[in-house]
Every structure is written in structure tokens, then in C-alpha cells.
Image 1 (cartoon, rainbow, N blue to C red):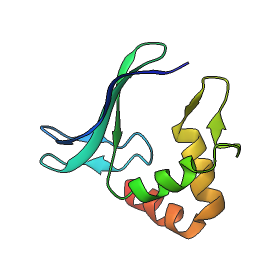
Image 2 (image 1 turned 90 degrees about the vertical axis):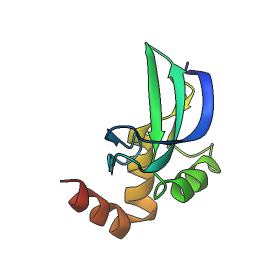
Image 3 (image 1 turned 180 degrees about the vertical axis):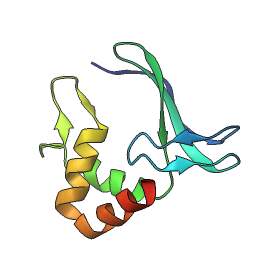
Length: 99
């Protein structure tokens, strides 16, 4: 199970990071959402702004297979599956940009 230590909040990146959902490079100075969580260890989960509307849509589907009931959490793998199924053209463009 994943527990939230710090709830999602907006920050400005002080260094480069990767979006935890899509893998996009979050540039220094770019605003994004971050939360701190604990599962197997403590980690920060970062969300770029382009993912936010898609993540919101995915999370309104808790009965779909995108939710990992084994760890009681949404995962980047579930997001990948959601995007490939619901928005394949967008996901393909994003993956090309991330290479």
C-alpha cells in the first residue's frame, strides 16, 4: 500500500526531473505538481502539466484495470495502458518526444 506523506502541491523545479506518469523531462524553472509518498521507500511523485487532464480522467475510472489493487495505487504502467487504449496517437507523439 502507498501512503501519502506530503499531498500534491505545485512547485517550480530547481533542477531537471522526469514526470512520473509519462517520463517527460521537467525543465529547471518549470512548474509541476509533486507529492511525497511511502511504499517500499520514500519517493517523490512528479506530474507534468500535460498529464494532469489525462490523469484526472483515468482516476475517474477506479474500476478499470488501470488501478493496481495489489498496492492500492495508480501506477505509471497503468497510465501507459490508459493512454495506449484511450489516446494512442497522443501517447505515440509523447513517446517520440521523450526519446
